[in-house]
Amino acid sequence: MNPAEAVSLHSTVLFVLPYRFIAIEGNIGAGKTTLCHRMAERFGCSLILEQFTDNPFLPFFYEQPDRYAFPVELFFMTERHKQLLEHFAEPDMFRSFTVADYFFVKTLLFAKNNLNEEEFRLFKRLFSVLNATFPKPDLLLYLHRPVDVLMQQIKKRGRDMERLITAGYLEELQRAYLEYFKTEDSVPVLVLELDDADFVGKENVFQSILELFNHRYPPGVHFLSIG
Image (cartoon, rainbow, N blue to C red):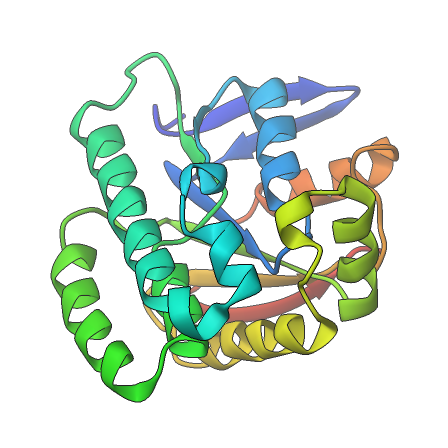
């Protein structure tokens, strides 16, 4: 077995993960961070989790998006870059692989959605420089849920700063992700339709997701569903 492959025995199913770096993506409220935590509990893998609450501009952005879009996106980009750079500069030799709850390209997608044309032109130049300094994930999993389910999830977790998020904003982000995936030909992208499936309370759903990681996929987008 390749030393990069992670093995987990659950019930009678043997999982062999042929990846060093997996990124879990999704719209706001999709459950990406929760899934990362569950994978870490199961496999003991390294975690890269976005510290979005550290962004001092985020609460103001939700109140006045036009005024605070550029500083909020610039802060996210530099913090994500720093976090990824530090992680891959000193990898944990005792962890077989890494799972992150974001893909660095997310930085560009959110910026394109939130910034005006001139701001985005400058932002894109900065992004291009930073994006070349660390590896892309070996596999990207996108958790796709309908916007009404996302709104329910956001309401359920009750974060004060997210109270002004609208269905329209989530729809715009969803479109941005799906349009980008059409152009991604260097990384396998799994777009997983979850609807309202619960991978926390229902072990069989979590098990089905894990089975996806037991396979190799060619670069490009692949549309899948649970059940």
